[in-house]
Image (cartoon, rainbow, N blue to C red):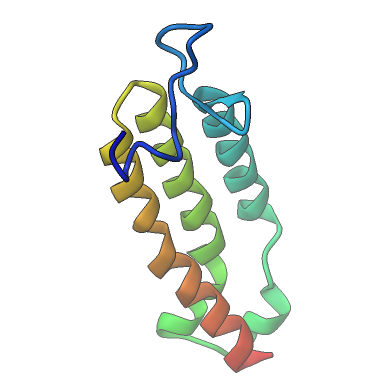
Length: 107
């Protein structure tokens, strides 16, 4: 098994279904998408007051973007592309790092 495929695995009982922690990847994708929708409406608007540019963008959309990217990664895993899933998931790191940086520096 490759390093990229070590987290996402195909169980022997249900061929073709990739699971993470016993939950099918397509379910994880739906959960991540739901969280992205939640973060569209719940965001640190109080901290964003008086900010602009990168900081405002990171506060407003960083968390949402992170969950959208993770949804795409889980979907890639669900369709049988674990290497692509890992690469897509790694793309969530800069989005989340920007969000956390903006939260810490404006808090």
